[in-house]
Length: 193
Image (cartoon, rainbow, N blue to C red; front, side, top):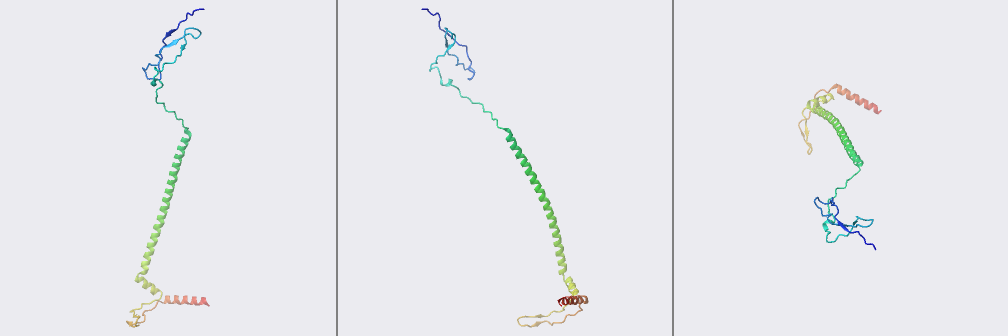
C-alpha cells in the first residue's frame, strides 16, 4: 500500500465585507474554513456546519425598513377625470351666468312695465278725483239736463212727518240735453216696433 503524502492544511480565507450590516461589523467571515488538499477537489472549501453556540439570534437577519413600492397608477383616467370636472365646472358657471343675465333683463322689463302701470293708475286716480269734485259733478249734471233742487225737505219714516218745505226745482234745463234724451227715447221706442 501506498502511503499518501497529502496533508490537510488550514488556511484562513480572505476577508469578506458584509454589505448587509452596518459598517465596521466584521463578525461574518471570521470563522476559519478547512480546505481539502487531495484529489480533484483540492483547495475547495469544506462546508462544515457551524456550532450552534457561535450562531447568535442577531446574525440571522436584521430587520430594516424596505423602500416604498413604486406606485404606477394609470394617469390617463385621472387626467380625463380632472378635465371632465374642470369642463363641467366652466360650463356650469357659464350657464349660471347666462341665466342670471336673462333674469336681469326680464326683471328690468317687468320693472318698466310696473312703472308704466303705476303712472296709469296715478292718472286714473287724478281723473277720478277731478270728476268727483262738486264743481265737475254740477257741470256734468247740468250737461245732462238736471237742475239744482234748491232747499230740500226731509221725511221721517217712523211717523211720516215732513221736515222743511218742499219746493219745485227752479232753473232752466239744458235744451241740448233734453233733445238728446228725447232722441234716444225715440230711437229705442222705434227699435221695438
